[in-house]
Length: 387
Image 1 (cartoon, rainbow, N blue to C red):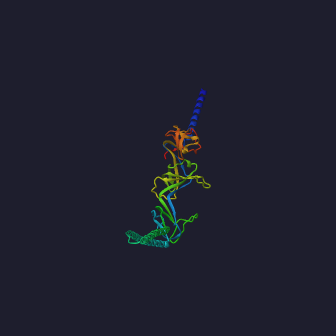
Image 2 (cartoon, helix red, strand yellow):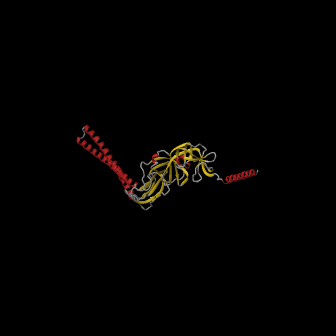
Image 3 (spheres, rainbow, N blue to C red):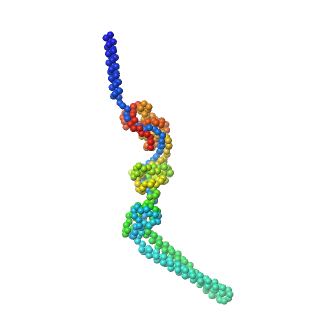
């Protein structure tokens, strides 16, 4: 009887200790680890390449203008920021002497025309006289010598008329020479655009650039109706780029906007800059010139779209570990490792060909020491795979 009581007491004590230990474990067990996850969905995945250094917005037409030869500036007919039309006069140099030369050449041309008119009238009259003389000879009224004299006089008068006509051409050439010299003192816009900068002042001496010695232009003219982006691409990426490929353009000056364009030119050579990677310059045109006041010289980044797949399963690229493995959260809320097959990929998203289904939840943060297979996790923030 006493042994039975001892046994029951032992059973009671053991049960109490077991319950106490179980309670202690239950209340002190570690809770689920908070992790960041992403839900797998169908969407678009692209393969892209970006420029290695900042690109630059360029104008399709930009000219640094200066007069054809040196002279003193007498008038500047535009100011910075003005929009000018093609062939509009921008400035004029001192040209009083050339104006006088042109006037002299025009007067000489007028005199040559008058002499030509006189000489040709006399030649025409001499020919009529020669014809009448020939008729009189045929009728026997005058001697043949008179006819020869009349014919010689007519030929001489005709020679004077021809010489006068040649003199008109010479005088016209002199007028053109004087006019061309005068044109060189007037600077005209070669195309329509915006006057970006004027470096000359009235009264200053404008000097054209001699061969091999660059001189600052008097007027910088930009056609802002046509813009494109010049961007350097790494030589490794250059063979993947083709004319006509779509591209996205972003500007530091407008970080919240994305502009669309296409590749219109690929440089046929590699640019080698000391201490920098070798690059190939490409030109990307805007599909439509934005209504925003884009300025030539803005820094720009270009993302060329090499290939794209629509409506495919995609996963954030940061969720992929070595050997194309990912952590997924199973139905019990525990981590499990899975190997996937991938397709197109970029810095943001990767196409999943096999290994995941729509709605699967994958881990996208690996900076916790507790991360290992089988642990219980709780999503801290579900990030849907949206652009």
